[in-house]
Length: 596
Image 1 (cartoon, rainbow, N blue to C red):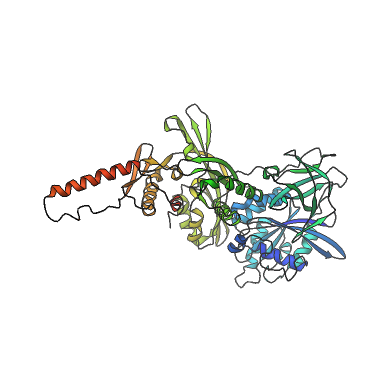
Image 2 (image 1 turned 45 degrees about the vertical axis):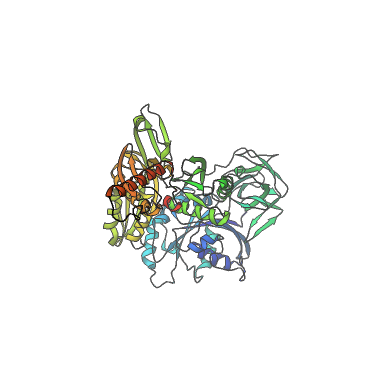
């Protein structure tokens, strides 16, 4: 146990975590030259294409230092605010953390957020200044920021470059000297924490765990405490580049267990593994259940694929514990699922993974947040879907979730950013100058306002220099109304949304105009209306595709032409009563793209 070190890498998005992890793996000889490639640990095509880490990845490195052999368990974590749950799980399995800061960008919002998370778990923090080889690196300035934030000495900050490999030996030395060896007792009953799981189509579900007490051997009969299920450990081993089986794993080690589990609900991240014969007294205090922030309906394009979609989402949930879902049905789209996501990027990634990994073609409805509705009888109802909103006459008031947002930016962009926050109904609470040209803004904002396009607008206003992080601060009463979209007086529930009273007219008009371009013309007029309650606040009409019935009339009496037109009009009216309007898939993404 003295020779084991468990540590993770935390940083803001794009500060070079995965590149630094590559150098660590190369330096310790964990990855051969033949297997070496950029972002070794990012095994999804999606991660490589976008250059972001979506999943946390665990790997064991062997390293000899001062005549002793050490086993270093590294967990590389995502940096985007939408995947902070992955970071919290990795931190729970470690004793130390490398805090990586980009020397060209300085400390950003997610750096601070992840640091607080690590401090809460009493992790040993090792500050690393990355990208020092770049010409525009502000080494002294960023060191000042790190010292001010951490309260460490200048000598504690390790200068490194993930690109060239400079400083990697210093990082490994600091990990061995500063990160404490795991606590625990090998003689006590087995107590291991599941921090991740993946699905293998041939071997079932593979659970990744960290042992806090006791040991586990191949062939042991083990029990998952929360679910109460018992399994035979067919294979246990350590996580190298490819899983390596072992006869036994003991206290402090990080490894995997394969026991032929086929049902995804039986493996819960945060569960405790123990022996059936000699169980541990207490389960490990796991992670809090994740609270989704953004909700959207996911429906199969072909109604017959409903069961396949359920299986696909269940398998995806194994790999992504922050995804939640429950069945629901819609008049327009049939049977599907109401899914909860941590943010818009998370939603986009899930959609993309369903398409790539499971070949599922899906329709996603408008994303929205969860609201609290207080009825006249003072009952509190949680509403995730606008169609679940009680009628207006039963409502007392609606509360919406508010966030406390931290925005770190350069001082030259402060004016437009404050204007953007105020336009989104934000309240500026505080502003602190971190240095002469960098400022931190603290803003209270409704979560519903940042769900759609806030992040994109913030990045474009600040030319990519602003960083954004938030946490939920509670619920507040708000003047919200349900905006319905009607096609030929029939509401399309998949397009309805809850929005602020002041924004309803503008949003309704924009949706109607956009739908007019997207819905193909029919043989009859189609009225597209936006309504709040019984009041129509916007309308567009798609004109009918018409045949010129008067073309054969040359001259003659006007009444003859009129007679033909009247006959056509009656036919169109009858057609409108029996005809239904097909809404193309692109129309359901209309609100997301309103600002294109």
